[in-house]
Amino acid sequence: MSTIDTRAADFDGHPITVSADDGVRLAVREFGPTEAAVTVVFVHGHCLRAESWAFMRGHLLRIWGDDTHMVFYDHRGHGDSGNADPSTYTIEQLARDLDAVLRTLVPTGPVVLVGHSMGAMTVLAYARLYPETIGTRVVGVGLISSAANGVTRVGLGRLLSAPAVTSLRLAVRRAPRAMQASKHLSRRIFEPIMRDVTLGTRKVSPRMLAVATAMLNDTSLLTMASFLESLIRFDETAILHRLGSIPVLVLAGSADIMIPFAHSVVLASQVDDAELVRLDGAGHSVILERAEEVAAAVVGLVARATAAARGEDPDCGPEYAIAG
Image 1 (cartoon, rainbow, N blue to C red):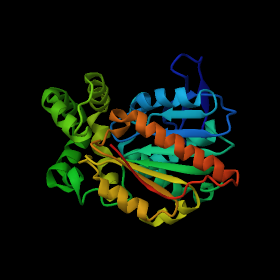
Image 2: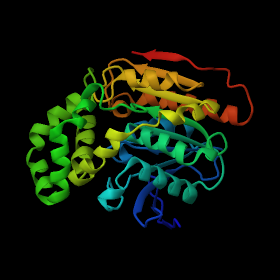
Image 3: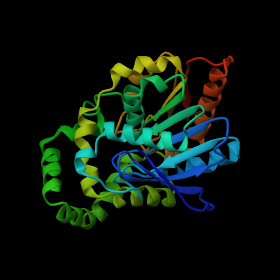
Image 4: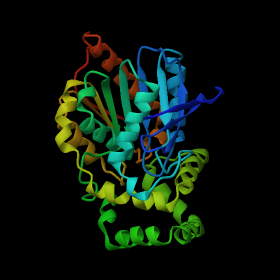
């Protein structure tokens, strides 16, 4: 049974600790009143943390003010959340953790789920595990820079199935401390590679790059490697038809070489009420480098979802948008 430990609010929101069903402590921050008409839960990607949404959150706070309840949390093994047995580092377990967060912090009322990369995969796994929530509790879904399956077929995701990656996973399991030390030693080599992989073709600010690099480097190599098998095997295409009953946003950057935009095209084509948005020149870290535009798309999604939940005509059907 999940439990909650609440501390005093600060200018960064209300910090909260939620216990997952197996006891792992999940670090959460809430913004906005819990009695708001809708709650939006943001689910971050692999090797990131809740603060990956910080740039977007600033825009959303200015737009929504106190009208919307927002929840951000760190996955197990990431950020300020607790570590766990590596055998639990799977996308399906992350979906169960998401359920624990929802049961604890959002027991009633409509919810919109927004995930980035592995976070979006977590949302899809949640829809499979808890189908009764889709269209009842969950009234909208945002899937950013992600895929429903086949992440090893195109883009840099192909490297996940290489023998070297298999060897890395085994080495990390056997000697995590030694491998973590080697990761820190290679930071100067790793940072420019990370810039090319996660950021797009446009120039980004040094602050944004520093934030992205810090989050990635703060994640232990054991966490990084342990989730790879789940990413390799990920396939939730069978659940996509269930999302057709609610508004869905599918958004990605045209310059994403980690999970190329083609994945988003395929994903959106299998959901009846999906809005597909391409941000030209944006990379995999689109929520950092194009935060304002992604925030605007999320605002539109929530407006569509809440209108549909009230039985109103949102006055906008499925569409394809390009932002330069």
